Length: 375
Image 1 (tube, rainbow, N blue to C red):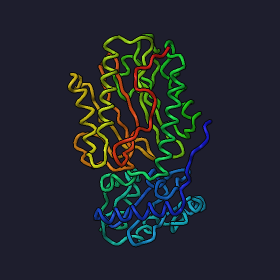
Image 2 (cartoon, rainbow, N blue to C red; image 1 turned 60 degrees about the vertical axis):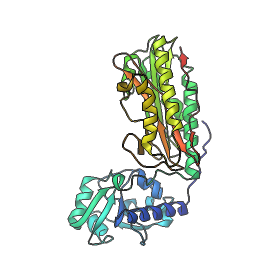
Image 3 (cartoon, helix red, strand yellow; image 1 turned 135 degrees about the horizontal axis):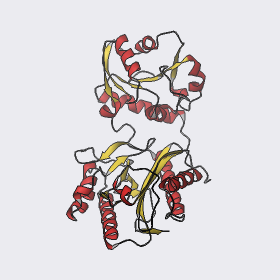
Image 4 (cartoon, one colour; image 1 turned 30 degrees about the vertical axis):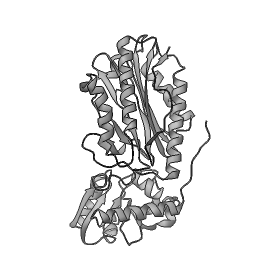
């Protein structure tokens, strides 16, 4: 296994993130943030409960007040060991007590709060019963850019995850494709991601022949045949940060049309990448890639957004899609992944993770975007 490149985050790093989140909430007109177990809690505190149960765990953030993590008493020892724990006040509650009353004491009797998208409905309803004067908004809707801009340490981890995914592609192109099931090649991909340091494999799409026309086919029992185009899209988490890359290979020599479509998608992907620069709206990346495909007469076959943000999860804001006017900022990381999908025939997708720099963009995936022939 490739050695870890993990850059450990300190309690001061987490304290800074929580302070920044509380300020952003106040700037958005919120009285505070309520963060349930999930990626936001991990990013803000380094704490990931070993089991997310019906027992309430909630981080309470408000500008000018110390952050408080409400936890079940039986999980308090683990929470106290979290990397961000020195920057937190822990408030535990025991079974049989009302956790919503304990949380309500930390909030004003009325107010508007941002709450994690993945908070359990029973917890939100419990808070509303205890504090009927409060209202709640989805954290993604009110603070979509909370985790979008990565610092230098995060970018190092993102680059390492991208390099590991590249290593997996360089190895998978050496294995036999023809005569094997998609699921077998997918298992090889998952093994390679783990071999090169991924602790979590989120997806391994192996979409051969007509299955390639379904962008989210993943894997199936179809036997890959000589003459197939095969879309490979794979990624996961390495040291807590995401990878996601797509390459489209061909089993044996492609037809002239297959090569032409592949070259078209490659040109569109390059155009999307070239549109990346600070201050440009996210939608400009989508427009640049989509224009290339539309001008070639394949616009109706490009059926998804051009990209999505990535960080402690493999899909998060911002999104590269028409209507998204969020300006790009140095440190943002997202995919650029145009595709063409011809129903019943084949599909092509090429994807890199890109980070915004001071004067443009930098790819975090460096494997060839030319047609790759496999056996």
